[in-house]
Amino acid sequence: MKYAVLILMFLAAATSLNGTYAAQIVWENFEGDNYWEPVDWENTGQVNISVSDAKASEGSQSLEIIVREEATDWKNKVAFYREEELDLSNANIVMDVYSEKAAAIEVATGFRVGEKWAYYESNKKPVNQGWNKDITFDLGANDFKSKATDWKYMVPLADRDSVKEIYVLVYRPAKMIQDVIYIDNIRFK
Ligand SMILES: [Ca+2]
Image (cartoon, rainbow, N blue to C red; front, side, top):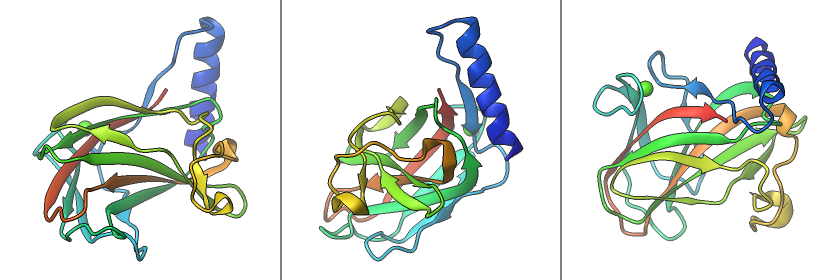
């Protein structure tokens, strides 16, 4: 909770000093312990995640995601999350993603928010082979999906001031078997 307050103060201070200056803080750089866990949803593939020094866009470590299951039409993604109370009213999310393969991979972000921990998911962003720096998710966008919209991308993210968990999802083309992806330098901006 202290951390969330700190972020708010930092963003407020940076905004007031310079109206259009976009403050940026690194929230997760994977230089320490791993706070992320894979989800156990029916429609997500099996995955191993761990902090690794094989690739990094910041510091010397990143989160290594080893996908162990072939992607099918209905199970075409893996997902993992970190629990933390955050106020992201004035923040967007930026991250760096490395893909070993030149496959049609996409990433998205998800959020559990509010008293009911409702789940919202952002639209997908393409990932090319190698490093994809500064992939940005606009948390003020109007094309999030949720259960209330029957999983159609057509609503804003609700309760941005009351985020409980942040998810990262990696979508993969059907028939893709093994895969390794790295994520680093997750920022609020
Ligand atoms: Ca790092």
